[in-house]
Image (cartoon, rainbow, N blue to C red):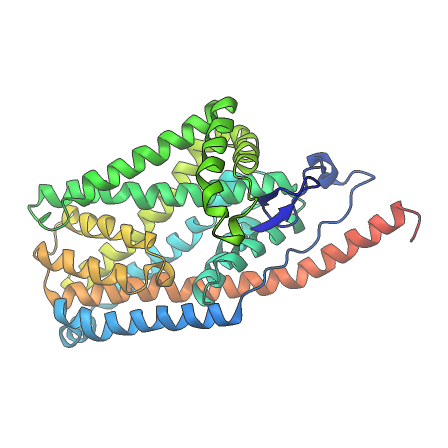
Length: 392
């Protein structure tokens, strides 16, 4: 996201490359259209190093000190060594399903995208966000650049990126509620029962505000005015907040998002549930694989509860993708519901490795193939624009 200043001197926030005076039709190849600029995202080196060191320190601490206290690496190694080749094949199949489903979310938000284009946008963003310290901003810029190269108008691209991010947040807040219910059914909700009502309250509040903004232009304007009133006193003390206008981006957000969500909310929901559901499927087949398919094993409801509650750690922005924090909570909840320490630790390690490493590889492939093709696409569109202006 980039801060821009309007002619009146008021600073507002909007996506890079997005201009209020550009009609969507221009991006579809009109005679007067200009090729979209590649978005530029700059990382503060010192901030990136500091955040990267903090995240790495937390990950090392969790895997070195915390997990050995609630799980067992030695037992996990024994459990992994006892896995059958059939269990490995089943895990591999679920990973392929997960990777295939993961790319559907951008098609759900922007139906003009083809399947591989949607995969490229989502997988490349995952690789950057999880492989670069403080890479979230760069990931957003790359998403915008990819969508621009696929001739998606700037306003539509911004709406699609926002919708995908929102639906991911909704699931991260909603799944722990169902997870607490699942753990309550199996009698293992001690210590996490508070997450249910707290998560439900936050989710209801977020959805209520979101729906209110979508339904009412006047309410969006009032919320923006209230936000400006709240920020104005801070602007006297914090220079970066001085003159920032919250109302303009809220109203703009409502205008861009309303039509997309009215048409695509169901597809967005199904796609996001498919992503999270296939992640759980990897965990469960890994758990059953290390326990042995011919053994009673962990109750599926308990396994779902542990997985669903641990999703809340995705909201803690210390490590990428909840690496370490989510794992520790998941292992603890599995063990508290009766799973053997070694099996719980082994299943988590298999789940993390198989849902993380292959996706990084796919994301790198997506980035490389897109980068080679996008350079030619932007160059061709620039030449076409120069020719239309009589300069070719």
